[in-house]
Image 1: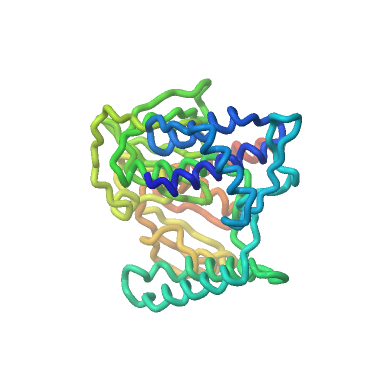
Image 2 (image 1 turned 90 degrees about the vertical axis):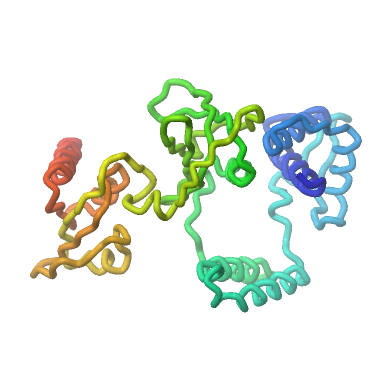
Amino acid sequence: MASNKNALIRYKTIDYCLRNNFKKWTLDDLIEACSDALYEYEGKDVNVSKRTIQLDIQLMRSDKLGYNAPIEVYERRFYKYAEPDYSITNIPVTDNDVKVMNEAIQLLRQFKDFSLFKEMDGVLQRLEDSVYSSQKNKKSIIHLDKNEQLKGLEFIDPIYAAIQQKKVLKITYQSFSAHQPNDMILHPQLLKEFNNRWFLLCGNNTKYVTLALDRISKISIEENVSYIDLNIDGDTFYKDVVGVTVSRSRAERIQFWIDKKNAPYVITKPFHKSQRTIKHTEDGVIFNIFVQINYELERMILGFGDSIEVIKPDKLRNRILGKLHRATANYK
């Protein structure tokens, strides 16, 4: 890891600490927090000196990086932000920053016709809107759905690095059904986003394991374990499923009816890429998809309430019917 990246991790960690007003932060506390953060990213001990953190604080206070962080010392030993709502992530973008970023966006747009960049157009649109809205008195034109309370997002960068560098991870994980967290040694293969949540597909010696990032509490690198690369292609692995739950079962033909009011939504936003329109009826449309039956598919079907009917297979139809019976019982 380059020294400038180490510095960015330290700045981010110091910022994270000083935004926590429920704890009094000494210099030793900040040193320990930065050391832990660097260990988490690198998987090995990094000696962070007192002088290094003092220089970091001095640099964050200055305008050299554009932070001008209002870090103050109180009671002669504790550090905090003089402005409770301050964060280095909220610093305003200068006019020159906007100019440079707009130039970069326009440069990237020149490559939009190359296959490698075909999926970048939406990203560039969001980036351009972010730059536009960062200017004074400008409102954002694009509003993205985001969950500020979503947990686990801090693990995306170190997990991504572990996959890229082919490192084995020790992951502390607690599923919703578990009474306490468990430590697992896993070989990370793929990060996947679905329905505004992030998941990690891992392998161990016998099977695939899918973990929700919001149920992970800790990760670290296992340097003494050899990484097993399962060469997973995401498009192939998730080809026959809605969502992230992949089983050893075969994909099946699912046929369902959608009422006339909601059919246009399903036509324009298919349940799955295998979706085909089978028949237009007087009161709706019949569709087919070819997928595995899993939890996410059931949740999607139930989300349409009384505007959907599963026609076949019978086992899915009966499973949905059972859930609806139990749901209506809650209102009696």
